[in-house]
Image: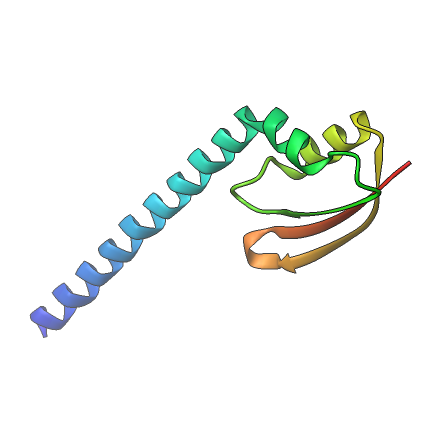
Length: 96
């Protein structure tokens, strides 16, 4: 019985450590994306009439993308949630 408890506790600790590092990696990726937002905007909002952007942990935040798009002459025309638990959104912008 003690062995079984040790295995369960060990598994829970292992899962917690993996979860912590996954969260930390996501935060580092978002920070890097925010720092490189100008490059993202130059590549994404390059004058095309319509732009589709998927927001995730490796892109600038929702707010940064929407404000950056507005600064470049685009307006948000549609928004949908792709993966709610991961806060992944798809945004559609029109130039105008």
